[in-house]
Length: 290
Ligand SMILES: C[S@@+](CC[C@H](N)C(=O)[O-])C[C@H]1O[C@@H](n2cnc3c(N)ncnc32)[C@H](O)[C@@H]1O
Image (cartoon, rainbow, N blue to C red; front, side):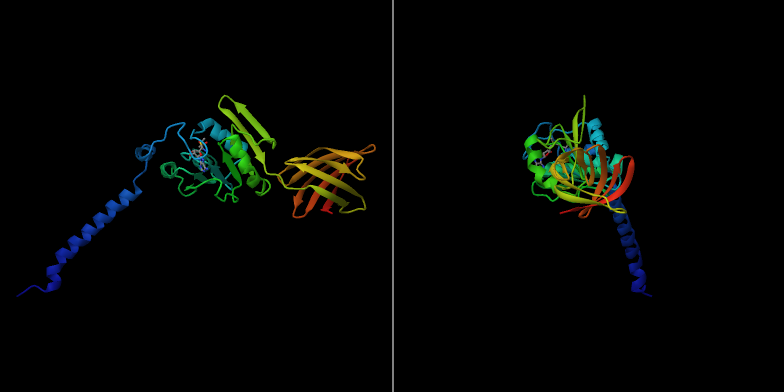
């Protein structure tokens, strides 16, 4: 009696199924195979000092990478952008050592691909990406920390964009300054120099401060050069001193006659909420711009 067709096909179906399982297993293994740094460099190995679009590639040394990220107080809630990312080491360190998310922007397509491969090799693909692009055409406004190892003139070209970023954004540069925008912190050692800036809020103008619970008030006129403030109080005869911004935070001192005033506050929306200490008495004042 002829075998039913179902039975005749059974061994084929079984073999085909087993083959499929085997192929899937091999493919899955290949996909999950660990990428190693050496593998990344098999396709492209850059050499120190090689030309880049606006600046050559020279990697920041490891201790300085860590110090730069420490200066910026990078943490797990930060989004770090490394502008001119090279092999991605700063972005990778931001994620591996400090738990941050990071984006590297690199113009050279081979270098960007190498950096993306390094990201995988270091196991931080869930938190780090490298995009191929020009730092002068890339929107990095979402960053809470920006790292740079470029050139003084490139820092200066980026400066207007950086100054429009959210107040409090930290910017760290390896070696190079920002012309007359003086750093908030400098760290120079045998590993190299690193500089930190904190994007200041803009507070220039005329302010009236009124005591929240009381009738006291005073007028302040502020001029601003980056984080540094200068200005006068009242009718313009008393100068303010030690005045500066730290992101949205403001501090200043002034004296009217014998009375010393110390103001510490924060810009919140259009107002400055401040603790004002006079004759050892501290009270809350609200400043509004006229
Ligand atoms: C001095 S290396 C710094 C690399 C990395 N940030 C580090 O500190 O190790 C500068 C990098 O910027 C890249 N670069 C130059 N001009 C660029 C541009 N306009 N846009 C994006 N990347 C650029 C270069 O290819 C190079 O990899």
